[in-house]
Length: 460
Image (cartoon, rainbow, N blue to C red):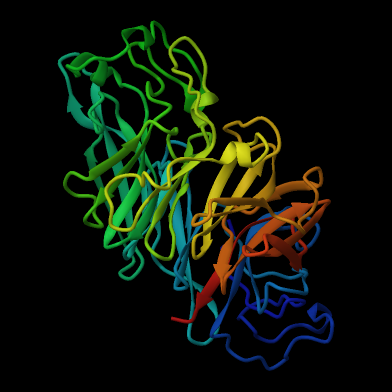
């Protein structure tokens, strides 16, 4: 596999080698480009799948001076890397998390050097399975439910919470496993979805997963024995074993854990509600972050109501629709004055897939235009929610829903706007969205098969 490096270039230009370095004449378009070149100290970074020579496509990091206009035509590119989950550590480093199903995946990171080049850092990390990820302090953190070494007399292993900590400053990786059984006091094991630093604390959405065989055999409290699987079944991420409860018995509850440290040590404060379902987006085994802090420290928890998707003799099907609730800055309970906002009604009967913070108390939502599902299909509209006045508006100025193929996984917020990659009608472009007017303007057009992430790197 060839290695991949980021290219930092004018919007209409893509060269090989260093960022803003010399280009071949046939690569320069619209009169842009500099044969001598100067070092870029900061620039936009786009992770895109391209086929530069019309052959096999691959994922590349591309660079541009602006996101608001122009065309990026990657006829010649730098180094290649495997596609993955892109996570920006502020503007200092870009990580490519590799999932690789149940096995460890090789993760790399990239920085912009003082002389204007994108450089792959030497650290290579074998990240164990993860279903959630985010930035906490100096670390990129991943988490998932894992088996521990604790076993009962029948050999049933207790579940834990497995963490990877990738330190962006020291380029080191550490792991830890914390107890995950009966985490919420209801007998179920859990995983997390997203991490938010606010008010000197770390907030995470806790997603109950059902009961393991260890939990069924050893939990002393009450639970629904009719939901214990009488046989093994399911497939892939939905596979389950005889003797366990494969899905949560509490699909219509949301739980937020508040930690007073960045290493998830000790017992967190649990904030819970039965006014909406668990707060996370779902894509197969992934739990996407749907809790975010506004600029004033208020934490908003968005629930799509995914408990309604599951069904079967051993599952408890939820009833709650898409909603949002708020934890005021410094509080340890949901805000009774804010209450529960029925987003699904505001959206005309549709739920959402993912959410992102924009600025202030504005949030961007990617919306289903059909039946909600755990595959992310039929997500073809965007909307803006404002917390202080509970307003919801679909975004104007983006392509029509029947033209949209996909949205980027990692949009970029800057200067009061958010920049979202959109594939529509065969065109791949980055749209600038103004949350105050809930309107979008088409910006940089990229000649690519797909655009996954966009952000900024500053020279280190």
